[in-house]
Image 1: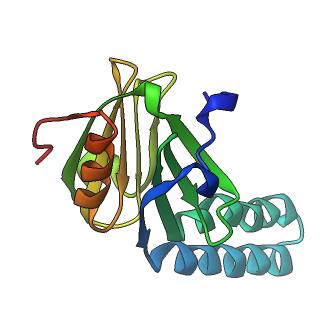
Image 2: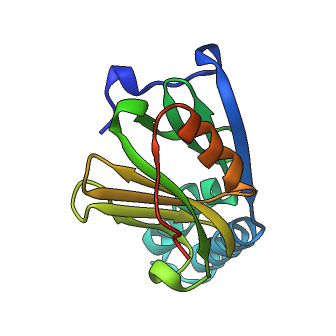
Length: 168
């Protein structure tokens, strides 16, 4: 849950910024729009399903780009080209930080999986490769795919966050 103190911004002293990009969300969104338009055009009563397919692109497209920002106030994860959808973690919530190696199918596949509130873990992965794992509130973990996560780990360790064990 985001609280007012969970708002790192560029004014807070940005220490590190990393991104992760992928093409598959754009291709999937295109396929959903085409499928939705075909369903609406070819099936007389198919407009609810077609509209659902078209609207679902709003969920898929933000995973095309993930940006992780480490500031003195904490960590911010922004999704999509606009960065409109964001998650923020105050520095006081961070217990540990480590790098991990993500595969396309570890953690249930690509996309946003889990729930910090309900399942005590969440993962945002748009590709295989390097990632960052944050230990939160003593019992939760958040994992995100990002290029060069070692820089984020070094910045957070410099702010007093414990370096976690090797995430593999």
